[in-house]
Image (tube, rainbow, N blue to C red; front, top):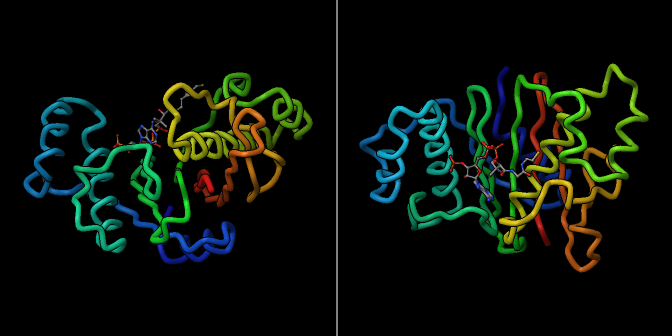
Length: 210
Ligand SMILES: CC(C)(COP(=O)(O)OP(=O)(O)OC[C@H]1O[C@@H](n2cnc3c(N)ncnc32)[C@H](O)[C@@H]1OP(=O)(O)O)[C@@H](O)C(=O)NCCC(=O)NCCS
C-alpha cells in the first residue's frame, strides 16, 4: 500500500478544520545522525525487535520538525506533546503536527494489516460504544473495531495528562462518524476532535484537544 503525505494533509485538513502537517517515513534514520538524547535510547534498544521501527519514527519526526521550523532536535521531544505525535505500523512511521499553538494535545495513530481480537471491545470501548458495535453487521465488525481502536489511541495520545487514563475513558459523541468529537469521562469542559481516514489495509486517525 502506498501512502502520500500531501494528499493525507489535504484530507485531514478538511476533516479537522485545522491545517495539519504529516511526514511519512519508510526508511530508518542512520544511527550516526541521531541526537545525543536519541543515542541513549538507541543503545537501550539494541537487540529489541522495535529498533527498526523506532529508527523510522525518528526519521519521520526529523522531517516533520524541519517543516514546523523547530530549532530543537527530535531527541528533546517528550510525549504526550501539545502539537506533535508519532505512530508506526507496517512499513510506515507517521509523524503529524500543527504549526499553530491552537491545540493543547495532539495524537496520531496508524494501524495497518491487523485486526483487534473479537471481544477486545470491552477493553477499549465504553458501554454506549459497545452497544453500537453490536448493532454493526457481523461482517463489518472487525474493521469497525480497528477503526475505533485508532480513534481511541489517537485520543489517548492527545491527552496531555494521559498517564492514568484508559482508552474506555474517552467517549465518542457518535461512534459511527469518521470525523467527530469526543469527551473524557463525560467532562464537557474537555473537548477533543478527531478525524479518521480509511486506508486499503487499515486506518489513520488524528485527534486533538482544543
Ligand atoms: C503509548 C501507546 C499510546 C503507544 O501506542 P502503540 O499503538 O503501541 O504504538 P504507536 O506506534 O502508535 O505509537 C508509539 C509512539 O507513541 C508515542 N508515545 C509513547 N507514549 C505516549 C504517551 N503516553 N502519550 C502520547 N504519545 C506517546 C511515542 O512517540 C511512541 O513512539 P516511539 O516509542 O518511537 O517514540 C500505547 O501503548 C498505550 O499505552 N495505549 C493506551 C493504554 C491502553 O489503554 N492500552 C490498552 C488497553 S486494552
